[in-house]
Amino acid sequence: MDIKECLMNHPVIAAVKTDEIRLSECEVYFILEGRLGELKAAVEGLKAENKMIFVHIDLIKGIKADVAGLEFLKSYINPTGIITTNQRLISEAKKIGLQTILRLFLLDSKNLKSGIQMIHKCQPDAVEILPGALHKVTEMIVRESKGPVITGGLIMDKDDVIGSLKVGAMGVSTSNASLWSI
Image (tube, rainbow, N blue to C red; front, side, top):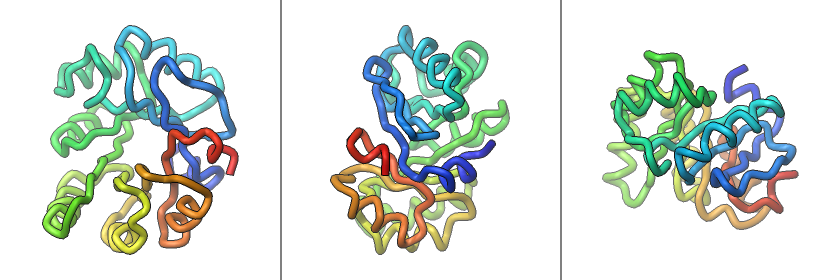
């Protein structure tokens, strides 16, 4: 199954740390922080519950965000895919069979323009936009991207989730567990 299918079933994504995972209705989990030593058990536990797991390779302590780190992650941890801000890692991860999410921090119009160029160049399976409460910008990225768009960051309540979905986002990642059942 790909991320688009999962997000059509349940658009809210659980954003968690390796040592703070709790099961929910979410079909997709983003492991955003943690330690390499905790990662395998976290991924295996979520896989046993038929969840899609994306690991933010840039933020896991003990693994380097490079080709060797990707190969290790695929061989020994085997998540569904990765999240990264690095377009080169997107291309390399796709080569070894990992699904990919390009995380974009949108700070200004220059950053927005370079983000759209990155999307076109590396063609990730999905794009995550931060902060996620920028609905006009989300709508623009949805038009430019070929894959699903996910918003995240500063998602405070149900209105933020609904606002993102209304402008075309396929999913919304949040660490706010009270929103996971929406």
